[in-house]
Length: 131
Image (cartoon, rainbow, N blue to C red; front, side):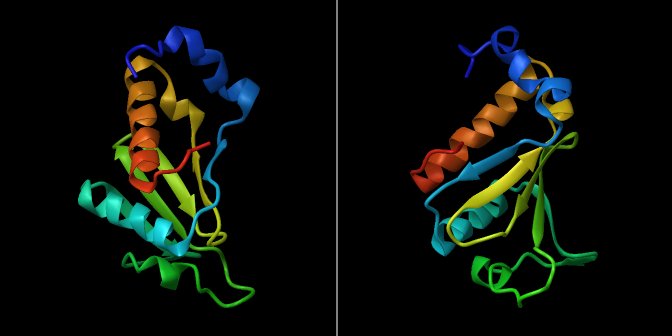
C-alpha cells in the first residue's frame, strides 16, 4: 500500500468528520469465513481477547460464538494489530463479518499501511471484498 499516501487519504480518517469507530464489513460471509478469520488471527500470533459481555473467555470456534441464545449480549473479539491499534470484531450474524477500528489509532502513514495490510490479508484469506 506504499502507493496510497497518507496525505491523499487522511481526510477519510479524520475522527471529527467520520466518527471514531467506523464499521468495516465482509458481506456474504458464512460461519466458515468467520472461522477463517479466527484461524488467521491465531496463525498470525495477534494478541486477542474474546468476551461475552463482561466475561473474558478462551477463543471458541466460530460456530460457538455465533450460536448465542436470544437476548444475550453479542460476543466480541478484540484484535491488536499492534499495541496501540485495535480492531473489534462483533459476532452479529453468520452472513456478515463486522468489526470496528478507532480512527484516532490510524493516524499517519505507518499506521495507515498497517491497517490496509490487515484488510488486504483478511480479503485474501476469505477471497472476498472488505468494505
